[in-house]
Length: 213
Image (cartoon, rainbow, N blue to C red; front, side, top):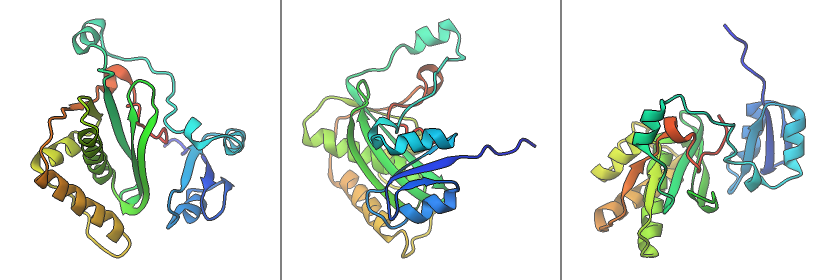
């Protein structure tokens, strides 16, 4: 069995800021801290250098990508529609600390971000991100589409229900209040926005990815 690679965690905003050598130490700084900003790195030097930089310059940074699909498959899929926004969620654990965001697909400019929430799941975050995007585009009367890499979240939105098995408790009370608002929005609003599955195998990670894999 291969040894798990050590990671270092940069916290830009939290109870304490700095570089932490374990996830538990990082988690202690971001738990119950509204608007926490953090990311993992493979080396201490990379984490230390990031601390002196801007959080927004580091999230969503993908490794170089080369598709394993054939030229014929790539041609059939085509290129992304850049008249769009992309949404994604990140959860450290299942459940764990979760947040979600939406970006402009072409420029990766961040349009919204929510979290971190305690005891959330990735599926809940993906669901909330889509609904947040739908509400934003409707408010702006925009004809842009939404990209997500979660088939589960797409199905939940279509059914107008967050079909999670996660139990409600005091720690995730604020999260489920947001879920209830999202479900209510879906049931009381009409929208024309098209929700499309992001083709990860052809295009790489979705632009809204937090880059923490």
